[in-house]
Image (cartoon, rainbow over all chains, first blue to last red; front, side):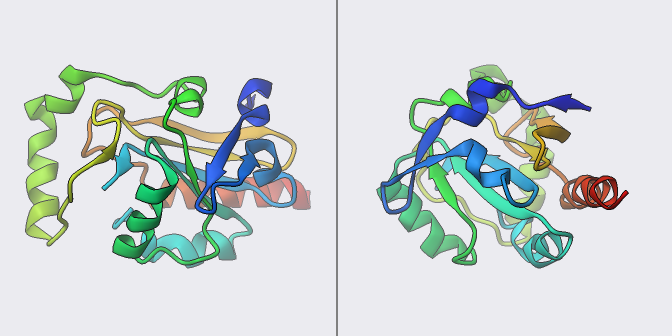
Length: 41
Length: 137
């Protein structure tokens, strides 16, 4: 198994409330299944 | 997401958190949540610049998006009643999935090969279970 790219973990994306969320925080406490959707629609 | 949604409880029961990243913007994501009835605890993140998609190694391709190879699955989804509204995001971007452990280990990675190719929920579950077993050991 590989380790996640630190650049990916450091990325900040907007949530529904438009506040930034650091991706690395998503799997800090429990594993994360991240699903990428092509677009919203 | 229609395929994933019924499996979210079992993925969470396996100790995981389900996160959705889309190529649109927050207003579009809010509409998406309303349409898809995703549970409120599922974080939805917006990446209009596709930075996370690129870093995750996901494909962006006009050819793969329009390829007839994806048509049979699209027809099956249509017959099951799944409908796509007007897309809000990058229509040439393809999706995928990552399952990441608390130490940053990537237990599962998939770059979709066409719009109708999706990460199987069973594969996500299996990866979360493997991470759970390695944490317990």
